[in-house]
Image (cartoon, rainbow, N blue to C red; front, side):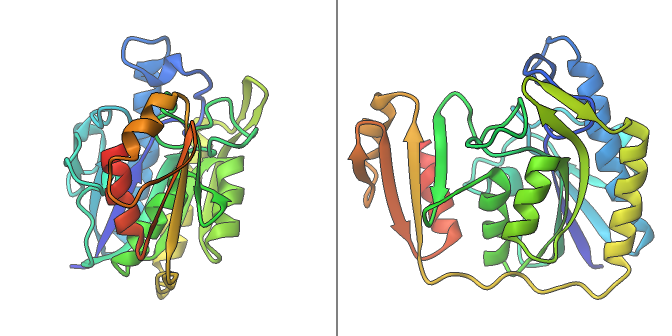
Length: 265
C-alpha cells in the first residue's frame, strides 16, 4: 500500500501562543496536545480515505505528546526519538509517497511567530543552509528529498506557510494563525481541522509531484547561543569555526548535514 509520512509539531497548531503551553505541566499544555492530535488526525483521515497508509512521527520535545487513541485506528504512530539523525522524520524511507507537515512554525530569524525557532531554541541563535536562513521545514524537506519523497502539504503559522511556499514550489499550505509580537491571531481550531482534511484530500486525489532535485553541495552554518558549543563542535571532522559563536560544515547531501548536526547540536 502507498504510504504517507506525517511529521507533527506543536508550536504551529491553532490556539498555541506561549512557550508554557508547549511544555509538560505548563498552562495550556494539555489543550495544545489535543489540538496537535486533532490536526494530525484530520490529515490521517484524509490520507486514509484516499487509499494511503499513514505513519505519524511525533516531533515535539520528547516526541510523546500525541495520544494514539485520538488518531484513526489505521494510523501508526512513532512516539519518542529514534536516536538517528532523521529527527522529526525518524522512520522515513524511500517507500513513502509523500510527507505532510502538521503544526510547523516560523524559523529562528523571523518575526512572524512568538514561538519562532529552529531546532533547539536554547542552543541556536540561527541556522543557515547554503547562506539562506533555515527553518525546521527547510531541514526536514531536504532530508525527505534525499529519499526521493516529495513534501506535499504544510500547516502552521502564516510565516512558515510563506517560507515553505517560497522554498518548495507547489507545496500546499494551511495557515492556522499569524503572529503579532507576543500574540497570535488564530483561526478557529475546528475550522483549521476541517481545512487540513479538505486540503490533504485535494492534494492526494491528484497525481503526486516528484521530490525536489538535490544540490551539488550543502553548507550548514550554525550560530550558537553559547561559545562553548562552538568550541565543542569543531571536534567533529570537517567543522570549521567562523567566530566564537559560529561554525560551518559542508557536505554533499542533506543527510550528511543532518548527521553532523546530530552530533554537534
